[in-house]
Length: 292
Image (cartoon, rainbow, N blue to C red):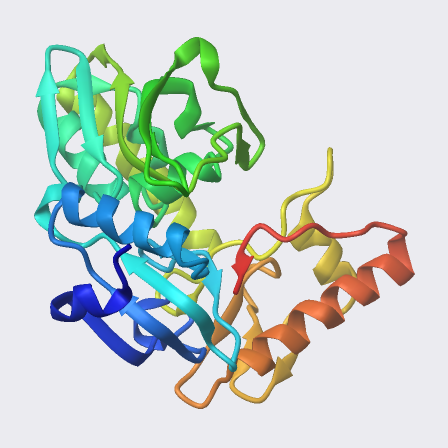
């Protein structure tokens, strides 16, 4: 049986995760591992499984809050080139889970393909986007997915095809440990028209969201037929501040942080918003971000 000591070349101990999250807060990972290949990734996952070591996967950190206590066990970062490859074959696009969604969009638009351009301005990696079915009013990533290759907690790989997948509002049926890569089925389109559509969407997002500040995107999912940001604003919390964290003045479903912020500051604001909205409107807000 292997042990974590076998992966010393790719391991950092007690490594702060704050710099790799968009909120720039949070504690360390007990073990931070960055595999260099799929084979090495599989070996690490099997080692953790065999030794009952807790395992988390860190993408771009765009929708994540890491607690001040940090994360026990192993945190994986899939930053090697092997996990971020993007290929275009006709109207079929294959992307590694570690590829940034923005990079995939750029590749497809340059190739004259449409289907993903409505996701412009949405941060994160392909893997994270698939797990949470990232999207907006113009559509979501799941609409174009044709297959997903996953890795289980036991280190087994298999591919789930379109008829084995389902995507809903900010959720998917992908429940394995992590995504390795995905194929998208797109359509041919006019590059200039696509770029115009992207620019319009980008301007709209920039005008309504605090994109120039540190944030983790939307904190809460929208309840059916209601805007979570509107509920938080109506509860009188727009601009509410705790330490170095503040509910955005531009969009109340965003929490922004400065250099003095802590994870506890963010957590306090989240709990305050949930409590006040529940008290005033009888609505229990569900988190869109993940909390470790």
